[in-house]
Length: 346
Ligand code: TXA
Ligand code: MG
Picture 1 (cartoon, rainbow, N blue to C red):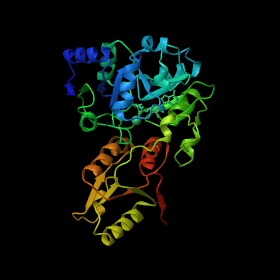
Picture 2: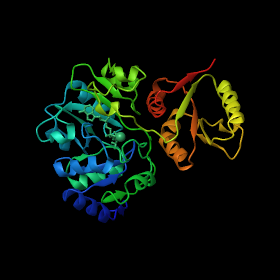
Picture 3: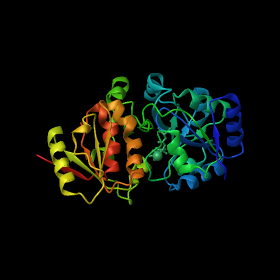
Picture 4: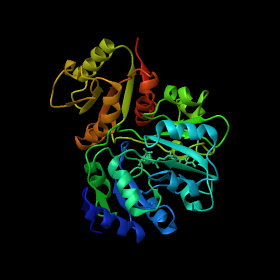
C-alpha cells in the first residue's frame, strides 16, 4: 500500500475524511503521542487497526472526540466527578473511562461495558476529528511492543506501507500517553499516569485510588484480567536490555564509568539528564540526555529509546530518576521499558 503523507490544510483534511469514511486508517498527531485513527463506529476499521499494529484484540482502544456533542451519544451518562474532570482538563492529555452505550461496537472495548474517551487538545487533531465528523478510535501509532511515536518520523518508520495516510505535524508536546482515569465507579481510579498528575486530579475530585498494577512494580500476570488491559503487555522496549541504577547522581556516574572501562567489547547506551557529559567517551558509548526537568524527560524518553535501537547498542544503563508527582508518568514508562530491572547501589 502507498501511504499518503498529508499536511495541515483543508484539502489534506478532506482526503483524510474520505479515507476514514471509506473504512481506512489515518495516523494523526495529538499532544501526547501520534494516534492510529479509524472510524470508531465501523467494525472493519477497528479490525484493521488491530492488524496494522499487530495488537492483541483483547486490548481495548480509546475513542477520540472533538467536543461534548460528539461525546454524549457514546456514554450512558457523565457522572458528577467526571463532569468536574472534563471541565478542568478537556480538551487535554486525559482519557476518562465511562459506561458505554450500544453505539460503541464491542470490538473497540473487547466486550467491556466501559469505553475510554479522550478529547485531545492538539489543534490539528481536533480539526481532523471535526472534519471526519465521526468519533475516531485510536491507539498509539506504533507497532505493538515498540515505543509510542512522538514524531511523524516514528510513525513513518513503523507504519509506512501499512496504513492509508499519515498527517505530518511537529513532534508531540508531552511525549507520554494520556493519563487514564476510570470514572465508572464512585471513586476515580488512576489506571495510567500522564501529564495530568495524581495531585492535579485530586485537587479537582478529592480521593483518587491508584491501580494496584501501578503500585506493584511488576507486569500483570497473563491469567488475571487487568483493569487497563494494555497494562499486561510488555511495552516500550528497546532491543537492548535496560538496567536502572537507583542511587545518587555521582554514584551513578562513577559506577557507569567503571562499567564502560571494563566492557570495551559492548556498545553501551546511557540515559541520564543534562549532566550526560560526565561519562567516558569512546566509540562504544552512546550518551543521550533527557534534559533538565520532568517535562523534557517525558518529551524525549520514547525518542531516545528508538535512537538506542537505531544505534544498535547492546546494553542500556539509565539513572533511576525521582518518582515525585510530576515524574510519576515518566518513571512508569521507564520502569516498564526496563522490564523492572532495577539495581540499588549504596
Ligand atoms: O495519549 C493517548 O492516550 C494515546 C493518543 C493516541 O490518544 N493513545 C493511546 O492508546 O495511548 P493506547 O491504545 O496505546 O493505550 C490505551 C490504553 C490501553 O492500555 C488500554 O488497555 C486502555 O487504554 N483502555 C482502553 N479502553 C479501556 C477501558 N474501557 N477500560 C480500561 N482500560 C482501557
Ligand atoms: Mg500504545
